[in-house]
Image (tube, rainbow over all chains, first blue to last red; front, side, top):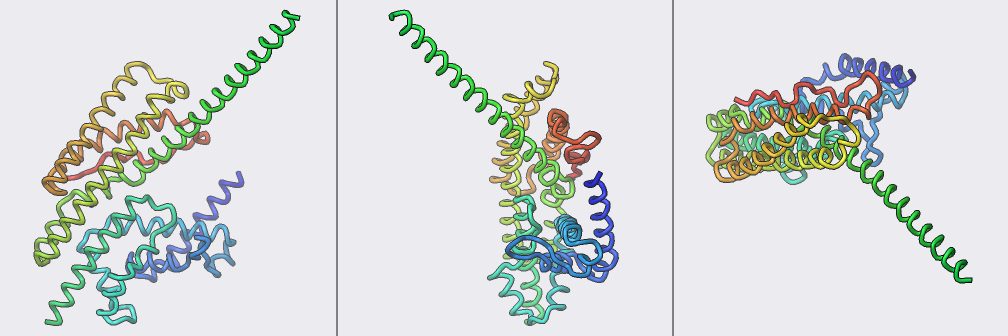
Length: 147
Length: 194
């Protein structure tokens, strides 16, 4: 009974995150990185003050984890064409120059820290592979424009 | 005196046998528990990731290939094909590994836990054999001819694997709280790879 009530609260919090936060973030790639940024590197737990005040820290953490998994699943289903578009837009919205962005993403591979906890190993590998290809295409397009 | 010694030896032997038997049955129940956990993990991995139609389609459908061919240089096209071949081969390796875990569970433990009739067991054994053979053929084909050379076989294999998962799910249903499904991905294996 208590578990069902908690599940209900989590669903309410998930709906809240979707309606109030994720709709304000236009692309799945940005949503993935935003949700990953709410996760503590050491504990793997998600923190969001407003959501925790409203629903309690445990429910907020679970809801953010659920949203993170859903966004990751949707991003995995994106075509390469869509992924390249998202990467170009994300790069433009960042404060980095395109050259810095490309070299940071190639060298540091920051997206590796952006997948949800307990993502299937294969799904993560596939996402990383797609992002590597999207990055290569983005780099090529930027070089073509510069030339 | 002789009788007492014989009694003591028999008693000690009995105690040793009893302790060996107890240890054996404990190990047996532990290995059954481990096999059940492993089978459940394998089933979860198959249903939520490896057989998810959107993921299988993304890997083996040709839309990404067409996009890359139309919009990218030869260097990027080669990088794309190399990445996709690695992913396709990794997919088959994971798929095969999870199938082996499920097969192990069915051959050694499922009979103790779930009631399967002999005909269902035979069908399941044939399905496992066909799937494991298909995995080997897929590995060879993808390695030699690239990631898009066997989409028909992938579609058939994921279809059969979906049925095997349904049987396994029923065998593992005793782990679920009443009124719930293990994972609830009825669409697993109904991929629409062109």
